[in-house]
Length: 484
Image 1: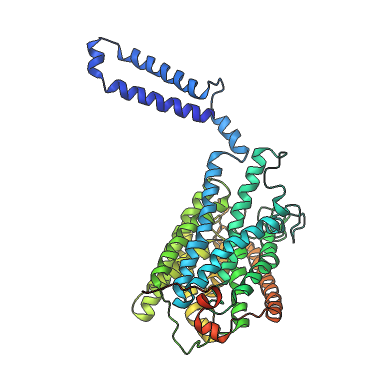
Image 2: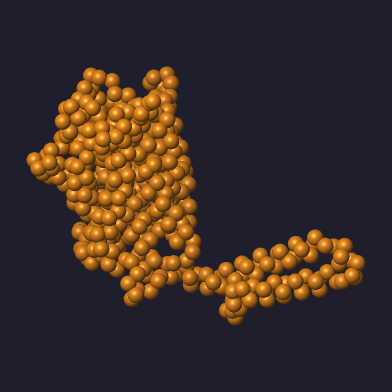
């Protein structure tokens, strides 16, 4: 309020000065001393501001600003974190919905979009009921607790001071957006063939059994992999979710794709993307949203957020060049699909590193991500013959693993508490590798059990006739395109 009062006084004073400067002739005609007029106008401006906001004797000093910042609820933090939360939500829909929607055949576009929009509702409610508590509650370094179920200790309760519940709600809503998009990424692997009802139950179980434990390991203050935990056994650097989001979802996506089987007609029938315009728009929205994803993971409007923002942009840009360049060399021309895929590969790769690697090293990381993920999607998938429909594993699983490893190489101590190989700390590769192995192990075991149970109780796939008809009509009774 005091700061707003000062701002209003200043604006009022400026208005008074502008009025004065606009009437020089009148001042000269009355032979009035301009400085006296300015002083009078300033006094009147202050009196006006005091009348509107109420006067205060306490001055706003740098010490007071620092004191406000220490409470955790200063305006810059609130503004940035709420904006970041909205950006991450935008990544699921319309970002991922358009990106994935353009890649499937036109008879399945609404099926993909429904998965994204429905998960925005489902995973949000689940996060509020129990997910947040399992991820960030408890005293164990391995599993969360139940003290925050139904948002207890998060929302205003008449006991917590505003500084405490506001800070808790910021963490709750920001982290909740990650809980939404992670299972949505997996949907790209089984696109065009899984029952919608099975997808719903799978997402709930996977979120609680796989996502929440990994998030607790890496991001809870007492997690055994948390870099901010002084007692962590293996303090891995994962600023924004290389393990939590991308490795967990990518590995799970591969396993589901193998267990559910190929689409009818794959790989003998052509199944090209039906609308690369949508995919390009979706990729651009993902790129913008990723600034909130990574820079928002700083938790405040701080220098760490600035570095994460710039490093994210540089790695995505280099990813475009890496994927497009290898396509150009191998096929004689670059494609828009390749450019979009390269951007996402770069964004995935920098996610764990954005808080510990500066923007200069983000460029070679992006180039490597573009090239390696290209081969994972174009060569490895074809060699082994699995039908990862939209390359969830090739981009997120491979890109996330690469990013987690390279974080241990390029991390610098002037950005993070733990340096990497280039900073003379090759031992940092050990916790990076441990975090990768642990995440892969839990994702594989948890996903395998979930899929087996669902296959036995609900069934995984739609019928052959429903798959041929398309999921838009068979699962939702609607069509994405009606040409009159």
